[in-house]
Image 1: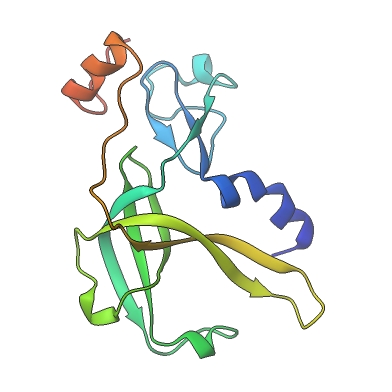
Image 2: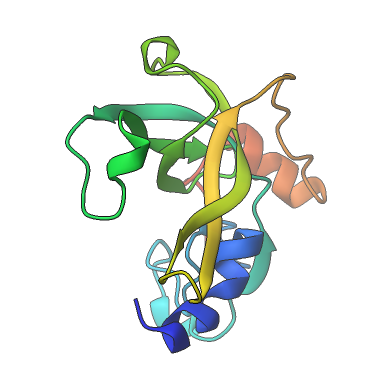
Length: 161
């Protein structure tokens, strides 16, 4: 990844900054400029609002990597997982601070920010999110008002236009 692209993506990488559709309240990560879930896509173009993901979620699927890609040889074995956040988006990330034999589907995790790699001894150090076991119960974000509370009770994709 180029340095320019890395710094351009810093808000998402460091803050788990996503976007939320003001019409259907679907949350996206990384952020989008249009909501594909709404029936009238063009009306949402440029209107998605910034949304901060909590970083809390659970493991949907995972694998233990024993034959690492170049640059990750010193980390084997390591765990790559798909994590569904409490807000809805699914993220791929490494699970750290846990024995590979203890990881399970449904395991509660929380995002943590760690060093990903560095470019040579005097190069740029890249940081980003990984996931660690959650030590306390994960709580669902409180709805912001009566409309959102109704959507949370009804579930995603049930909003009417």
